[in-house]
Length: 125
View 1 (cartoon, rainbow, N blue to C red):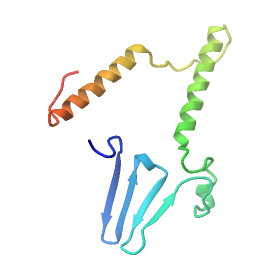
View 2: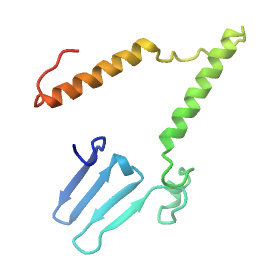
View 3: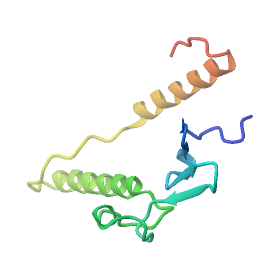
């Protein structure tokens, strides 16, 4: 088994060096120039960002902003659904996935694993 089976990322190479980013450490960007490797961290607690960027950073590194946004949207949407169910006049809530969507997701993951086990062969869902 691979040491990082869920990691996605990229490496970009040029004549001046390379950039490396991995989803498992999404707050870090590794810059290699052939001299000293430097890691730049995104987060509200780093002073190397100009004010035009740092004013948008609200959380320290290690806490991805998309996580907070996703939770806030989920909670807001659930609140709307509850209030709508009580008869309150609120904006419509987004539908949330249910059991059927969960089962479909598990079928997809199983097909992806089966495909990988068979050398990337096409696998029906």
